[in-house]
Length: 289
Image (tube, rainbow, N blue to C red; front, side):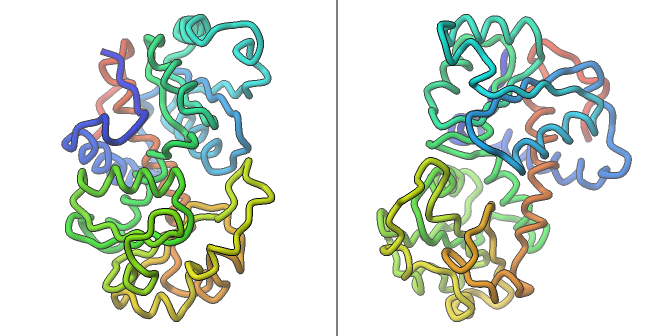
């Protein structure tokens, strides 16, 4: 059976918990990674610029013994005359998995529909599940089990926020959202007693020129962080527009765990890849812990 990783809500609770546990296990083996992907290849397709997604997937594959091929949509015939169906069938004959980072969610789901190999959502305008798995891993590292924790989301209601909404009932945490589009709390109410305060850029790629005036009340400041639970974490998936969605003093504070969060993309994606490859027509050299 082909295992795709497209949206958290499409994957069972037990499976997602198992992936998260394996991510922690694989991080503990960071300096002696098991070569479970020996001989396997991942196609990485990009429609958008990338730092963390490209690095994390490429290093994940190579640390575990695999290989990667990197293409942009402009490099492929899919941007011209070739259909999504034909592209999916061709990819399925050449590589063992596909990670795609694209604006259009229907491009991702179209590839998954016709592929006989795993397709992984590296980001679309709809959702960003790999990021949320890394975020939850980071919270668990710092504060223990995610179950029962409170996470506050401030700022723009975007693909990352939407994926947090998917994740909350699966992992059993409380989610408080304060945004101009879907505000259920004022910023101060949202962060009250929060274990983690999370935000993202107000202007995503492709939104250049967007009016940000309405977002200023949702800026994460030291004053706002002081209303969260003592020891609350500040998180941001990056890149950051410093002085907009978050102030510099918050970024320099002990609450800020953005670099741990970024590193955990690597380990979470190792676990996601391992789950996708298992029982998907390829054999891992040995099972992950």
